[in-house]
Length: 341
Ligand code: DAH
Image (cartoon, helix red, strand yellow):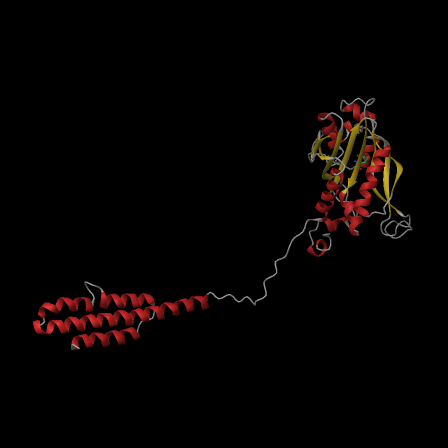
């Protein structure tokens, strides 16, 4: 072979050793094989300077060198690409045997759980939800509920007044008036929400949650109330739980009752939770006072109603055995994690 061709071949062999990537192989290949500028490509242009009798031999040599270089560098390119792919696999390798980082799952707050459970139970009996507002007027919170300005029952609830007219509602009972003013009987609503009173100890908090229930229709009696509450306590505190009504007083109900349920801790034999009585007070209720119906333009001769007010925190405290209401507001995960069934 022509000495020049041999030199080029050696140049390719030794140069190839220095190559580290398929990109470098590509550039290197171009340096020799590019039709116009490559070293081997240019050899063909030399043909005219070769003696005519040498030309056939020379052309054959150049072609052989070209074939060889294509094969040699082509093989190198395949090897380089395979290596690059392998390197990429190595660098992207995921260790699937590594334990995953456990992500903590949150759960609903016990107040929300009880609220949802109560809505679920009562909506099963046909109740609709009406959410009132936390700021109310004195009229809706008291006067329309048969508790005028000088009524002694106002002392039962220590009120946060915002002005002589406006206040933070002390009871979700205020929602009853809005509903009765806007809807004709039959009425069956539940009104859950926050209420506020200047009261603070282990079982009372200045802000807490209530769920009001109101039914107005023809022929509603105290029996309907007891029937509904029986279903409610069985679902919340267990199948064997019973209810009893005790006479009480609320200005907006007549008669008014305090509702107890049989102690779900001891089954009624007497324990610490029920203070040895076998019964636990759970809510206030009654037959809607005729004056309240009349205040809302409902004919009290034609219609009658029942109402009840459930304390959600109290329900949660009883159900989960919590002795301090503050546990429900402090967002301490150690406590909340125990209260998620
Ligand atoms: N509003 C009363 C309270 O906050 C609870 C209550 C008692 C609501 C009797 C009622 C009811 O609807 O009939 O203490």
